[in-house]
Image 1 (cartoon, rainbow, N blue to C red):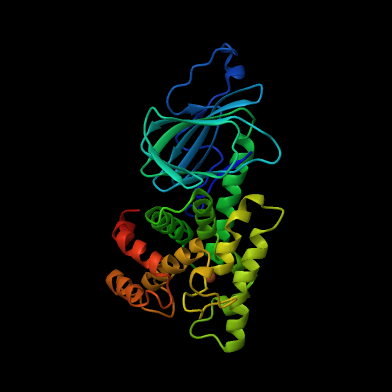
Image 2 (cartoon, rainbow, N blue to C red):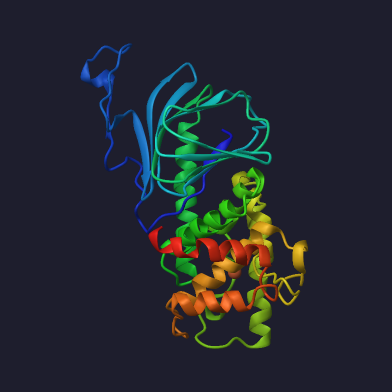
Length: 335
Ligand SMILES: [Fe+2]
């Protein structure tokens, strides 16, 4: 399997069988096994989250036909597979997909086909609105894909709960980051890193003791030193051989608290030495933190938060990112 969808959902919303998909077992129904007709909303197997549904429509001799519904700013990243070479293709049925590879970007709509035989470099597919498409693969990957979707959801929920956020926090950061990344026209590889890294940027907090993570009020310098380690822990966890699909986001987790003027952590990197996707998450995460209800802080209005980020352009935040952020921030509410 060479692809994955970076999404995280509200608590408890993932189901192994989608709510709207009726799973059929043709053999038990005594129907003709070699000729199957499935109506809209029917399939052999399905996994679903708040904004994505994958449905296995057919499988034969390793080939799979999978129906995808991907809501706005959901992302599929295709990466070269080291284990198997496969044909992978998408036929767009509804909505607009933004496809990028190397430094090319193209928007495609219903009737378009994307064919990769095999995937040789990162390809990033983003749903610019709610989309539906059929995905075809010459190797079986549905079950692995379903497991990954479920694992991603579980991990994202775990991070959110550990940090005392609502579970929608990580998905919000991911969508805002992807929107800002589109404005910056990031190359495919960086966009895939951004989506994965934004979703799991605080994964390292799982290793920070609760009494520090949830302490109301200011941390002591010693406590803050421990807190800063969540960036290093995050990189380590995302580079784990257990989770190869997280590797692409590890630098974002490591650098999302670096600041443009060198005042950030863990390394005090400056300016364009900071990985651009991490600089995007820095702005978006700060904006979300400023406008979120936290036990020790009155949330700023959106306007106040935007003004603060504008003021810190070129100081804490990369000017390229702030300029892109200011162009798209008005769209955040509709996501
Ligand atoms: Fe963080």
